[in-house]
Image (cartoon, rainbow, N blue to C red; front, side, top):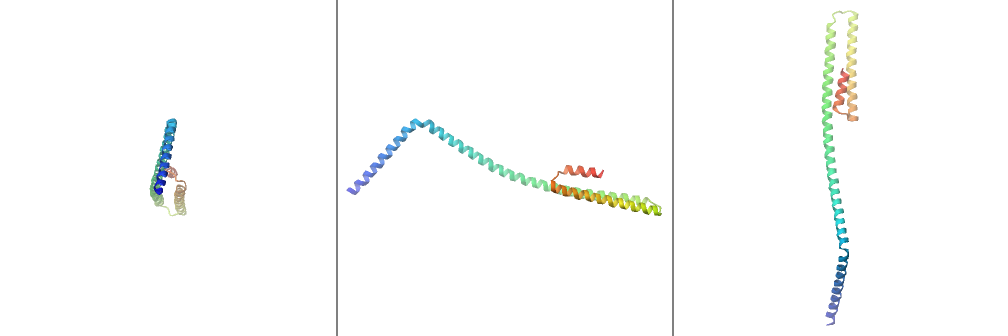
Length: 163
């Protein structure tokens, strides 16, 4: 019997402590209800702000990566278009110069020393023009790669150099 009474006493003490403890809690709840509500609301507000901040940061990172990828694609496309344009213009201008020089050379009927000298001068002018065009194209491509200039600026510069 003594073995059974000891646990009953222990259980009784635990029940009394729990009842008194909850009673104290209830007494404080009446006095601090506004404080508890205010504290709960502040905690929920902070949690909400934190959750919103995390969502914004995550979306910002995703959109930044998307923007970087699209920008790289646009730059790559612009470079390809510029290279094609430069090659086409270079070929066209060189051919025009060659045709013009050929026309001038064919227009010269005299086979004198003067005509030979003029032919040489025309050939030199043609070669110089080709060299200058190659230098312009090469410097534009290097500049475009280093600076990332826009297509419009380079087209304007190529057009002004041609004039």
